[in-house]
Amino acid sequence: MKTWVPGAAGSAYDVDNLPYGVFVAAGEQPRVGVRIGDLVLDLAPVAAAAMLEEAHVFEQSTLNPLMGLGKARNDAIRRWIVGLLVEHAGRADVEPHLVPLGDVEMRMPFDVGDYVDFYASEHHASAVGKIFRPEQEPLLPNWKHLPVGYHGRAGTVVPSGTDIVRPMGQRVLPGSTTGSAPAPVFGPSGRLDIEAELGFVVGTGTTLGARVSTAAFADHAFGLVGVNDWSARDIQAWEYVPLGPFLGKSFATSISTWVTPLAALDAAWVDLPGQDPEPLPYLQVDGRAGLDISIEVSVNGHVVSRPPYRSMYWSPAQMLAHLTVNGASVRTGDLWASGTVSGPVPEERGSFLELSWGWREPFAVGDQERLALEDGDEVTLTYTAPGTLGGRIALGEVTGRIVPARP
Image (cartoon, rainbow, N blue to C red):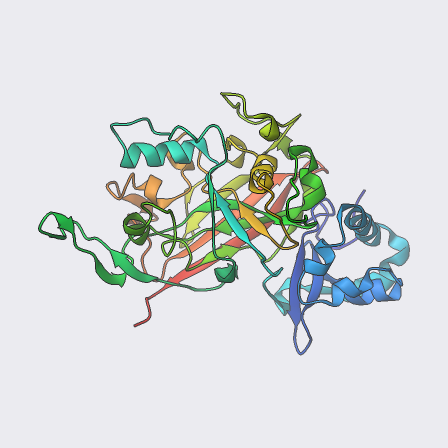
């Protein structure tokens, strides 16, 4: 199976990838396209000419109508798109609707309903435990029994390329006390951080009271996005006891503008690294439930970390099962993220908190050093995975630049 699209065959965006996005060409309305090589296929006119039953979903400014069609119809649409791009008979009808990436602007790919962030990396959770609780066990007693998570703020999920305004808030500076009590001050966060994560997007929703089993994961998950869950660690440290993350997390979460369909990851599934103790029945999985996805974290063009997603303790299917086990419903466009992806060695840590080991050990960014993000820093997360054609496919990258706090 080889595409006729110039430059696409053998690339990270070959026909075994085909991520969806919402694009805008000059003077036109936003609509749905699919990426092939360094081009975007404008699906709306092609589907209309083919009198495709679902043609209307490609005319929309969000992927939600497409994602909500369900797994069977989306699998059929994917087969149709592959056919368009490999069969020479229809090339003359399709080629005029291929638009260079440089000629379009990518938009937020879907309307986010609810956003949940998990804490699914044992290496990350253990590192955080060692940093903040050095005299105790790194993992809290519940961690290996359930995927720990919290509900985030859907309204501040932004597309890649959006500037990140340094957040303001309360924090406690070292030595700031009134008598024996901490004395908070108000101002811009001084410990602004990244979290290199992977996100999963709901296609088919559920009704209130229903639960999604681990075996039904593929029936409800439409695809994947890259995620950078920006974190103001000093604000978070002061506020999170006893209820957990709030303002330290809610100011911005960046996602990729391309959504990789779950079907593109067929060659990327791997065994989980091992779960002990055995999870409760509703969290048990059959077969390969982990994903072999490589992440690269760059700051100002310099690679600082390469977190491996295949090291994650909890699988995406287990996260979705736990998210819904109490009867909580999910809707088309809901997003859940993995939490920081970190590996077992220093060069695989997915946050500045870990790379600096609790703000104590500066790490190199080119010929400079960092403990936390500075104004002007630009962070880019890139993702690759095995493709079904034998090479590697690229998931959408996530980029954000830190700008000064607003007065």
